Structures are given as structure tokens and as C-alpha cells.
Amino acid sequence: MPNEIKKTSKINRRSALLGLGTSAGVLATAGILPGSLGFAQAQSSAPIKIGFQKHATGIGAAYGRWYGATTDAAVKRINDNGGINGRPVEVVVEDDGTDPGRGAEVLEKFANQHNCDVAFGTLFSHVVIGSAPRAGELKLPYFVVSEGHHVASGGLNRYTLQPGITDVKSQVISMAPFVADNLGKKVTMIFPDFAFGHDHRDFFSAAIEAQGGEVVAKIAIPPTETTFTRYFPSIPRETEVIYHVMVGPAVLTFVKELGEFFGPNRPELFGFIDSLEAVDIRSSGLEFLEGSYFWEGMPRHVQADQADYEKAYRAAVGVNERGASVDDEADVSTYAHMFGCWETLNIIKAGMESADYQGPQDRTKLIEAVEAMTDMPASEDHPQGDKVFNGKTHQTFGKQYISKVTDGRLVVEHTASIEDGRYEDEVDYTTQSF
Image 1 (cartoon, one colour):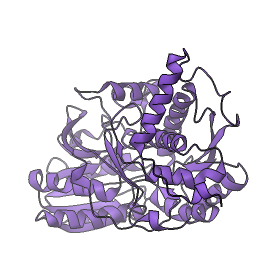
Image 2 (cartoon, one colour):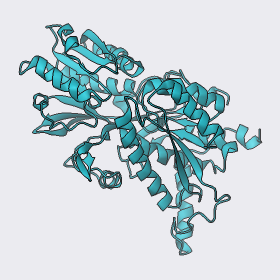
Image 3 (cartoon, rainbow, N blue to C red):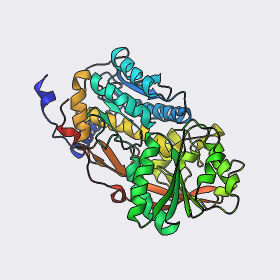
């Protein structure tokens, strides 16, 4: 192994970006604008290949479609601005069927058939958990856009990183004080019966107890379930708040049946927007959601204080002010999650440029360069908001949003700070060998 690969990177994100800015200034002085060189000045003109592990089919298909659209928009922006290290970016797409077994097979194809530089994009936690060990065996950097605590818990490996989106543990720690102070302290949880849902169950139970509350019932539902009414009689009468986070193609059925079961005399509702991703809140039967609350990773509806960088991102991914496709208002995006693809691709770009990445022999240098990153200010690269990356745990921390359904719109009522969601490190991946 070359010495430069063995050596721990001393470059942090700030110095890397300053270096890139200096290079851009030199080019501008010479009358050459970034991007105008095309890809001719790179040491290699071959494209950098990013393997996109896409949930094109299975229960994650709605997410996969919008993760794909966001990925395409981000790569277009990167290539329009000169690519990465002067080389174009090419995305290689494989469908994992939202299935952990197929997920591992997809990584094998990226590494051995497509010769990809990195793998990227996975959302559903059971697919991440099923795929990450193979990424480690293949020594293929695996940038997941999931939310489970599986990365930061230390359960995976040094080749698996989650730098562009926060995890469930951080999210629920941020949300619990608002729930306890404003909605109630006796909570019934309804969640999907797999790793992502179990993270919600475990971390929110602890977080609400820390606020003097309690979870009075935990209702786990198979993620492939298509009807839900039979579960609702298990909700105790003492329940003050129903905490719901459902995923998959039947989410509209879930929220409709929840409303039909309770009628106007419902407990307070606090949901994760997962229960309504890709669903218009104005859909018939969802009127009962008026006045209820949702966690959002990124606010779906344009807010009164919309930043210019968010406006630019929204336009680039082709989404209107209500979070639907500009071409079809009935096609509602997964806006609270898909920003993670955009931001992760920009992080891969910054990491490769910091490491002077030339090919697979530089994969460890890339990982070390990303591990050295810390502050990620809100910008067109990071339109969801400010973030802080923890290189030891391979997990990012960011702002969280609580929105209230008001006149059929999701209006941000509370923004939790980065510090609200911080927790103690549970692993130090940087001590692990490659």
C-alpha cells in the first residue's frame, strides 16, 4: 500500500474549501471560469462512476423515484461546474428492490462489474444493514442516505458513512421536549416493524421518559401491511398523543383509516412526515390532520423566510412551492428526505477534491478526507441547513423541523438546533483499519 494511503489525512473541510477557492481565483484571474475547461485538464478523462443503489421497486419505490430525480439534478449541477477533479460524473443505477439480499448483490455489481468508485443512495435501514458488510469486504466506500442509527451505533464498518442526513436518534431527541411540553406525556407509538421503526421505538421511549413522559403502548406494524384498522383498538384510552411513523405504499391508507377510527375526538397527533411522504395532505379523507404536527427533515412547503439557496435547490429538483413536481401536481415528492442525496453527492465531490482522488487506489484517502470534515454551512451545496459532521461516528447532525398543518399547509412551528440532537459518541471508526 502506498505511503500516502497509510498516512492519516490532516486536511479539514475548511482548508480544503479554501484551497479550492484559491484555485478558482487563479483561474478567474487568468480569464478562465470554473467549469469552462470542461474535463480536458484532468489527469484522466474517464468519468468518476457513482453506483446508485436505488429502491426502484419494493416498498421504497416512491423514495427511490425521487432520490433518482434529486441525484440526476445534483450530478447535472456538478458536471455543469466542471465535474470532480476535472472529470465528469457518471451515475450507474441498479435496483435493489428495497431488499437487503439484493442490496448486497448490487454492491457486488458496482465493484466488480461496473468498476464504480463509490456506492451511494440507500434509504431503507434493513437494506443498509444487509449491504454494508459487503461494502466493507469489497472495500467500496458506501455513502448511505438513510436515517437509522445503524451507522453511528458502530454496528457497521469504516467504509460506510452517513454524512448528508441526520439519524433517528438525533431526530427524536430533538422532538421529545416539544411533544412533552405542548402535546402530552402519555404517548402511544405506531411504527414499522423493522430496524428503522425499532430505532424510533427505542430512542423516543427513552427521550420522552427523560421529559417526564411515558410510552403507554408500542404498536409495531409489518411494513408491507395494506390495512391498519385492526391495530387501532390496541391504543389505550389514556393516550394523550399518538406518535406515528409509517412507510411504504400504503401510507395514505394508514392516515385515512386513523382518521376514520377516531373521528373528531382524536388524541393529539405527532407524526414523522414519513407517514405522508409522496402524499398530498389535501387528499380526500385527510382533513382530520388539520392542527396536527409533523417532523420534517426539510420543510415540504415553501416557508415565508425561504432562503435563496433553498429556492435554487427546489428549482433544480423540479419541485413547486407545495413539494410536488412542477410537471404534475399529483406527483408529490419525498422532500423531507431526498435532499440527503443532493448533499451527499456534494460531500463526495468535496471529499474527492480534498483527497485529489484519481481512482479506486485512493478510496481510503477519500474516506479520510470525509472523516476530516466538520462544519457544513447552509448553502446551495447544503440547502437543508447547517450541519456538523462527526468523522468518528460517520454521522452528520443538523437542524430538525416541526411543522403544523395549518389551512392545508405545513407551516414550521419549531426548529430544533444542531445541539438539541447531539449525543455521546458510541464508536470511533477512525481507529479501525481499512
